[in-house]
Amino acid sequence: MFEALSVLYHALQESRLMFRERAALEQHQHKVLAQQLPWVAVHSPATAERFRRAGLPLSRWRELPPTSKAEMMADFDTLNTEGLHLADVLRVARQAESTRNFSPTLSGKRGPVAVGLSTGTSGTQGVFVTMAAERLAWAGVVLRHLLPDWPAGLLRTPPHRIAFLLRADNSLYRSVGSRRLHFHFLDILRPLPELAAELSAYQPTLLVGPPSVLRSLLEAGASAQPERVVSVAEVLEPDDEAALRAGFGPVVQVYQATEGLLGLPCPHGKLHLNEAHVHFDFEPLGGGYVRPIVTDLRRRTQPIIRHRLDDVLLLAQGCTCGLAARRIVSLAGRQDDALLLPNLQGNEITIWPDFLRGAMSQVVGLREYRVEQTGPRELRLPLEPLTLDTLQAAQEQVRVALSRQKVRIDELTLLVGPLLPAPAGVKQRRVSRSYKPKRSQADA
Image 1 (tube, rainbow, N blue to C red):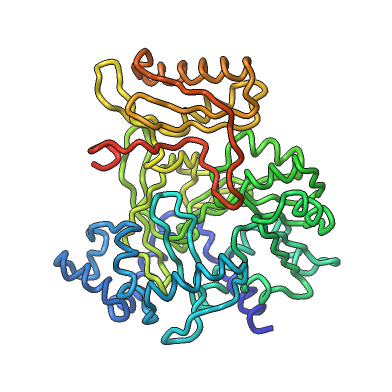
Image 2 (image 1 turned 90 degrees about the vertical axis):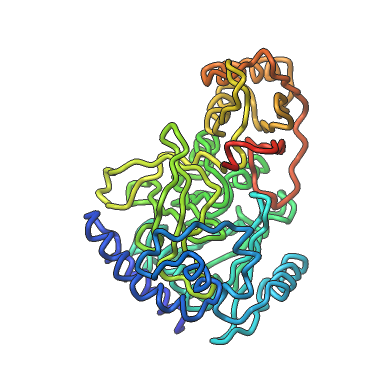
């Protein structure tokens, strides 16, 4: 009961943090960080050492050199504030993944700590650890932004039924379930026909999951009419959004990573940065694209201070909803997934995943695909279905898209073949780069 009330409290508080004036939002960030940074510096030796090495006082935190996920993992034992060891966290998290029992926790200085693993799509699998208070606050924020008919939905009869299609369960969902909110976890590692049947029987009012999994469930015969579909864990591409909207209902997306809850939908369904809880700086990448450097305003078990993400974003100021938080026009992909190809002068240039996804969406009859750079001048294009028409159209669309970006396409090799099913639970990446040059723009 206490946990449900705590979630409700945070959801109600969130309404006060949906700022409509940019100055008020930035003043809020400054106020919260003035309390957060001194606490973290005292309780996180790794954070204090970063400031000492940089020769900076806490007040100049925005000048702190950014850290990466690999560095966070290397410093984990002295970064976290609960006295946890990475080896123990990995042991418990991997055991949970293996047994599909996600309830075990570790004992921290202030109480039980829940652990989890990221999918490791960036090449470095990360861990995340949270105290109960942090998880309850997270649930309140998410509830406020995702419940279709807030706040009246808390009083509806029958209550909301929320289905989570995820790789890993979380005891939080069970603990905050009540007479007003029913949570149901569907393990995406199970066979699709079983999941489709269970989803159809449950008939959720709110459906949450990766878009590739949700679309596969539609094709496996799932039948449900949720009031809202929430896309998580993967980039929501236009073709998937259209299919999910037609098959299930209205679609919004959430932007979340190991580093925190980074983006939430506004009342008009547009994705905004979660700037009431995360501070964002940006590194320009050219063409309007930026790479975020994030600082979590409240997270303390595993502090996130000036952490560089691998994601590539397109942003815009202003939205019809009137919120001050910046709007995400596009989650263009990960910087490590950007293709590195020769231009007409023979210089290596960056091609963002957005361009290839847009091109492949024009191929009539194409259900699924991958574009993978496997060499300096080699692209693999697995297609489903693989027919003469999809083969020719895919090759043409890729060549046209790359020609518009001034790529020297006469030197490219396109290897087209059938697309094999991805292992269950693996995050979808339609455009990727396995080729690693000795030195590239992505490393600069």
